[in-house]
Length: 368
Image 1 (cartoon, rainbow, N blue to C red):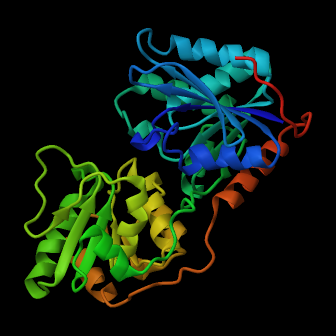
Image 2 (image 1 turned 30 degrees about the vertical axis):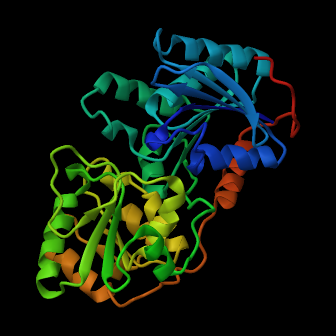
């Protein structure tokens, strides 16, 4: 079986060519390891040279949107389809790639997959014409997959009698339990304090104002509590006095950060984004056995297995502060068996195989 994956080069701001990670990398990689012929076609929104390489058993092709917009990418996708003759075209990472996957699939008589890890309509909520194209593509795709059941149900609502499959998120393999004191020493963090952590977009749309207010409340009674933040910070957003912002850290340091924490806080709002969000930071903390406290949404409850003591109500700083206090002495927490990218890739493979008959496994040269 031959599979062409379409994706932007930097989903979630991380360059797949030099920092491969997540479902955009591990699902194709594992399918390739299982004997399938895999090609990834990536689009850069920066001025970068066209590139092609063979790595991890897959063919990687990258185009730039400069200077001619996405036309070069679309032409390259059509060239690969006509020469590589994939059995499936998978649209990863954003609405545009799902729409393109379906259009190419219909034009060339190839199975099409739309895979979504977020509610992409929430990214640009005012762009209704794009959302209409997206919903039509969802209805016409051979197969739709999503990061969790609530998102899958939402996407399936545009598919008449056709379902959508759940392909869960997972932590990358470099996340594992590490010695807390040693991790703190490496990051120059205090070893004698209770450290709350927040990793991700430091933006009001994610509910960080609630976190900051809760932290101010907690500090009044417990001066040994410290808040550590990592990630990109919204301009002109001030962090509380006594909190520590480490900036946007290298990938290799993130397992150290997670393992340094007493509690990881994963916040969101009950928005069109938050209601369908399956935060990968939850999976990473769970893999490291770090207690988490996350905004109480349906996806979060599903990821955590309905452990209500690990959730707090959106926008309620007093509830958040109270739940933090109850978890401060938890040390490590064993969440039991967790999903892996191997399991998700197998589920993805089975979904493909259930929707068609193919030539089977095998590699071929890709004339590009």
